[in-house]
Image (cartoon, rainbow, N blue to C red; front, side):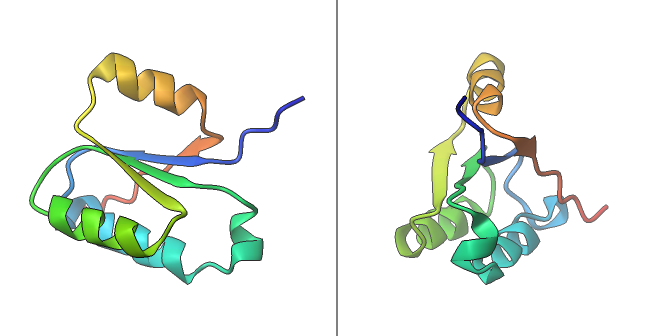
Length: 88
């Protein structure tokens, strides 16, 4: 059986939604702790440039841009869990 490993963060890419916190936490994990997983980020907002920049330097983070609800659901089915790092 294929075990899903990946993590999904979908939503508005803004500071209060915890995007920076999530990306820094992910980047701080060792490759062993990541276990071959990829962090998938879907959405748009003021931190989109930051996310795109991080993706260029970390191949374990993939940015999908703004997706439809159907596309987010389909991506979520490929992931083991969803990350909701909102700060408030």
